[in-house]
Length: 164
Length: 253
Image: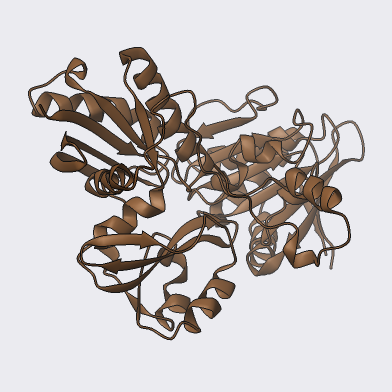
């Protein structure tokens, strides 16, 4: 089953993230994949706004992990600068996943070990200058439920086109 | 003259501290503070040390030694505790001793008589298991540090032909599984205390296993090998061992 959302620009990608935040729960993990400039951080900005995070969101390329307090804490991770899977332990990756927040992992496909047994994979592809295609790759029961709820929440948002 | 011991542990979400007075190998708890601080140990540990000393009317210069819980627990938690203890010990010129976080919890049950099983939450669907025999106020450890799936430990413990009391923060997730295997201790006794740290330390003093006291030599107990280390081990050992015997946890110390 493939679920995709096409977004007309960065603003629409953020709106999709905002809609996702509405259905997120503590303990949820999102693995984000996509080329540089695809909009992974834009999506997280929308999620953060939806979770009630007031501070600005930047890509944690150099920080690797940024913690944002909100209605649910948002753990924003970027694996881009890690060289090997053993460094996941160094950053307490697995502890963070179970720390009672929502974890959004950019470059979440960098190491197979980074994927917990239940999560939602989100792949963002660049279709044109501003157009992006977001493909949902649910793994496990919670990931699957989340994917369905997110698509439902996206239906009412202008600038989003849903295919399943 | 009695000595003054500061003990703390941040390996789990419970921050545990105590001040104790020591005469030879006898350690008495003077003051203790134990409270949950999920992902907040770094910010609260040193201020709480300061409060504890102030409540006792003392300063850090009155201390004669420091005891720290070496884990196992969460990676970040173990690091915060051990790194802080090393810094304090170096700075104040004090000896530093370590105890297992699981042992410290087990010593809370020294009035029990019989077998005690402790399961620490190792996350990623696993636990840190340890078995103890408790008799006449002494807690003897029967198994080494390890990490394992809760199903396997529950099975092993179910095969023990003896009543078992079970405690540990791993029960928060796996109470159902272990409830079939033994009697669960009350939830308020599932986490480590400062007094338990001091009791485990006193047991090391009695048995002569307290260690050198060199802050540089003390090592954390992480137990779980990283995947890379496991792969390395698998390669190093070669194919003459079955899969299950190769990638197990190391001693961790």
